[in-house]
Amino acid sequence: QVQLVESGGGLVQPGGSLRLSCAASRIIFSIYTMGWYRQAPGKQRELVATITGGSNTDLATSVKGRFTISRDNAKNTVYLQMNSLKPEDTAVYYCNAQFAGAVLAWGQGTQVTVSS
Image (cartoon, rainbow, N blue to C red; front, side, top):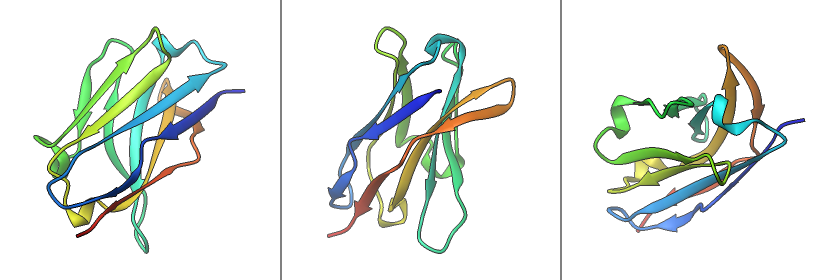
């Protein structure tokens, strides 16, 4: 069974940066598309960024120019570098593993709070 564990969340001031990590196990990591999603209180979960096994990336319009998604296949880890954070980025951030359009697993989530 695929396991995903996120880390790196926390409290940061507006304009600050955080790097989230998602470590995968029990998976042939390099062939999967990995995604970062977020869910703010009272809102639906939304896509933040995805990265394919070939490292093609896609980012939501709201985070383009501020967030970067990357992966290290040797470490079975996907990262989300978040810069110039805004209060509206506050949410629980989740990673998932996708194959052939199907989501195979979700992580437990990590809280990101942007506040002064």
